[in-house]
Length: 296
Ligand code: NDP
View 1 (cartoon, helix red, strand yellow):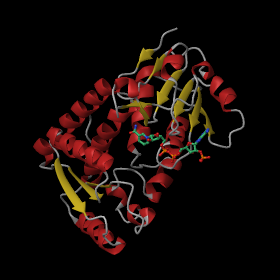
View 2 (view 1 turned 30 degrees about the horizontal axis):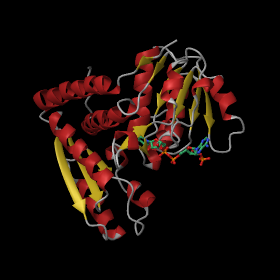
View 3 (view 1 turned 135 degrees about the vertical axis):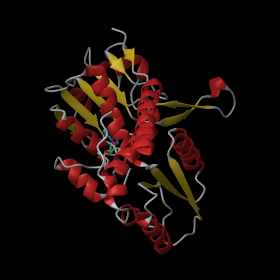
View 4 (view 1 turned 60 degrees about the vertical axis):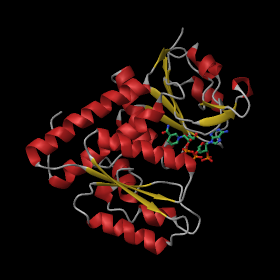
């Protein structure tokens, strides 16, 4: 079997087009322009590229984008004051604080200071709790993107065996929760799992969110399984020239493609879905804050 490639670029373009349609409706029917505020602290090059993409795609979707650059030595108190100001600003429907933050700042304190209804990253403890108990949570963007791609590929996932490798609060746990909500039988594997290969071999759905290059081997994949590779790992690629690098996922893509029925590539799989889901969450937040239900 050679797997179908799940095209995250194409799928995310569809999600963004749907977001734009909703934004147009909110503007025309309700006079509301959703607004997303992004706070970035310091000058981490990877974060800066990511934030630039967020700002660009927010504007392309017709939303207002508010970009706040804070210096790397900002105090926690000053950052909390900025979050408070944005919480109170009615033009801002979504707030995102780009992580990681410098060591003088407690990340949890900052995230939990965001008004839960504006927490478009879905990391606030209230949103984690709502997700775990079946409430109207803001769902973390990467997990939401993973499950949207799975639904689009598989359709009804009820009864499927899913293995999520990784148990972080931002990826592994929320992905597992969303798969449980789809009536999958879910196993969460982690660094203390005794026989990871054996767990993965039983899965109809594999989601890898570990951060270790090509750790999930091709022969662990059950024939016909669907594989979502969240990992982003940069490796040296001297074959491409001096100092060059390449990105790989947590799954051995070539090997897994021989067994899986469908698989996400890295890059071009889960990555593009994350910003698309952030935009979708901002529209959801704006609708909830104004008590509006949009039908498309
Ligand atoms: P974390 O480092 O927070 O979590 C990694 C998880 O992997 C932990 O639960 C850890 O287990 C588990 N793990 C580590 N080693 C092993 C092992 N040998 N066997 C089994 N499990 C193991 O990472 P994140 O969840 O934040 O991110 C995971 C990956 O996803 C990274 O590559 C990251 O860059 C990528 N990512 C991609 C995004 C995108 O937009 N595409 C967004 C977010 C992340 P334990 O808990 O026991 O330590």
